[in-house]
Length: 53
Image 1 (cartoon, rainbow, N blue to C red):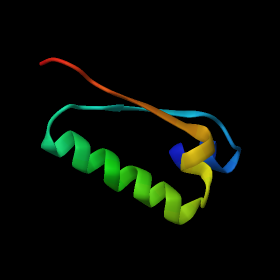
Image 2 (cartoon, one colour; image 1 turned 120 degrees about the horizontal axis):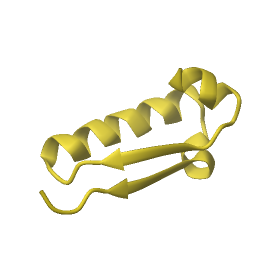
Image 3 (cartoon, rainbow, N blue to C red; image 1 turned 60 degrees about the vertical axis):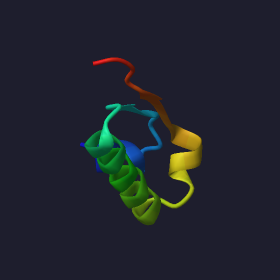
Image 4 (tube, one colour; image 1 turned 45 degrees about the horizontal axis):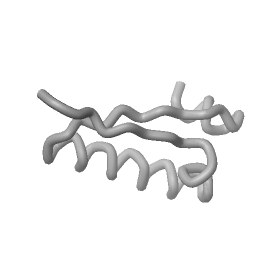
């Protein structure tokens, strides 16, 4: 589903958890998207870092 939305140029929102594995998984996801769809992460992806636990 994610790849289909990226192929159509949809806006993507990523909620990042504020711990080490949250940052790591978000970075891995954004890097993967950049490899498959260059330039998309800068234009179609927004994110927020979750605050508080």
